[in-house]
Length: 125
Image 1 (cartoon, rainbow, N blue to C red):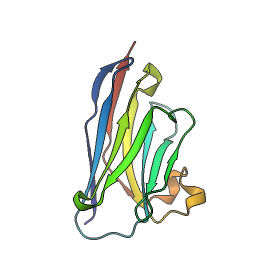
Image 2 (cartoon, rainbow, N blue to C red):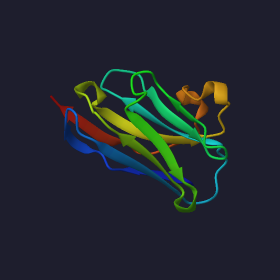
Image 3 (cartoon, rainbow, N blue to C red):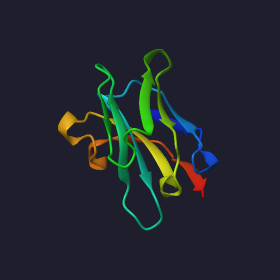
Image 4 (cartoon, helix red, strand yellow):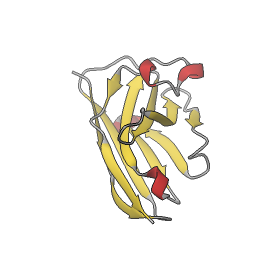
């Protein structure tokens, strides 16, 4: 069974950096892209960043562009989210996702078939 396991969340102060990791394991699953989403209580899950697994094209939400960087290590089946200049509004549970996603639809959570369990990121001011 395919699994996505996130790690690297935790507490940070505004201006700090954190790096999230998402390791894919289990049987080979059909995916052309992996992404990161985040969710706060009572809100919908929102797109943060995505990367295509073959070409390495990257996509970012406007709220994180220039501060966050998504990357992949194909040999380790791992995708990373480097988060710099963190802000209190970045506080959320961050989820890793994978799926067969049209590149015009990477921000849409429903296009991702596989999800991790989530990791909490809390940024204090």
